[in-house]
Length: 111
Image 1 (cartoon, one colour):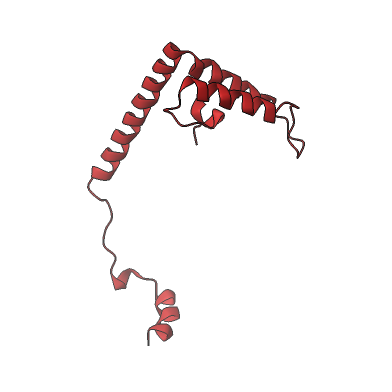
Image 2 (cartoon, one colour):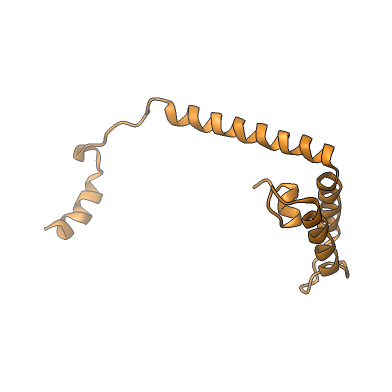
């Protein structure tokens, strides 16, 4: 799964700049010691949080990022639509196609 800057800051895409800053500060306070309770190193996550804040706190960078996300979503939608619109390559199955051992196994249950 691809995470967005919004995911790293745990905010909705329509959040205003005050909410972005509040989420950033809260996340940094929560991760201030650099390791989780289970001892995992959080430095990579903290770097991603800093990068997310850098992009989302600047209106120009944020607009460009949102446009990029919208283009990626549109591309994914078109790809899915083309896959769903393809004529099915599935063939119908007939009883004769079922292996005899499987028929024998289910015959007592069907009776």
